[in-house]
Length: 50
Image 1 (tube, rainbow, N blue to C red):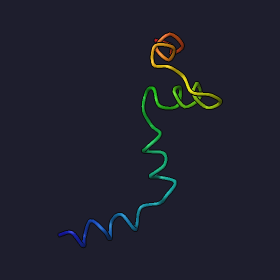
Image 2 (image 1 turned 60 degrees about the horizontal axis):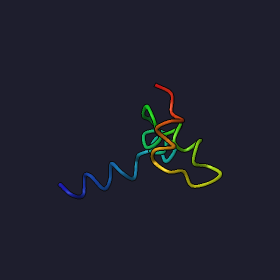
Image 3 (image 1 turned 60 degrees about the vertical axis):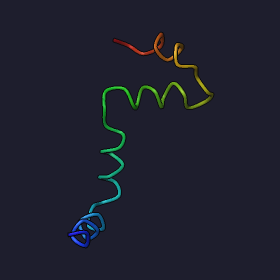
Image 4 (image 1 turned 180 degrees about the vertical axis):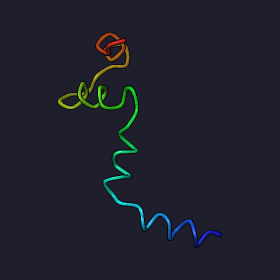
């Protein structure tokens, strides 16, 4: 069974894996805020919308 999982992972497109990793409600907003400098958690909470 382990070999099937490895074969499926190799067939997955790297761009598809990246989109899955970055998808989510807050991930892109957090990356945008923390891109230039480190940001404290409470500062992130104040900056995030909703």
